[in-house]
Length: 160
Image (tube, rainbow, N blue to C red; front, side, top):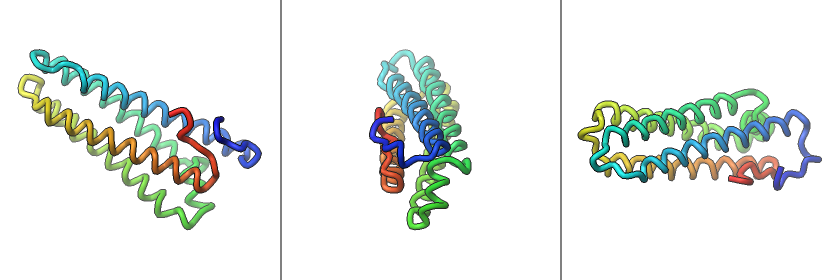
């Protein structure tokens, strides 16, 4: 584990950090797929383009849901910070709210894709919304990494 002083972590914490990194990697990989398909040609193939984006968003939503579920478990780094570091509790709450907001925004974009049925999709608008969503996800990930580092001096963003 890059940047981790393993002597400072208990076995359960070490496993929770490994799981957290795996969740973060899964959501980042899913985000990369969204960005890949968003950057693909859309003109003349709107139905295929929106289907690809929809599938990638479904994968991103699933990854974020799993990450959120794991972060809510009592042995997760964020839950541990809530209990062990009361001064950081509000920041954990804010992170969880932002992750929830991201999931809602993904649902909104997916809904927009479903209602346009591809043929009349506003590709520029969808791309713009996806760019904003990607920027917000990166921002939240960085805030989470900073929070965990502040609490434990463990860099969960290593390798991202």
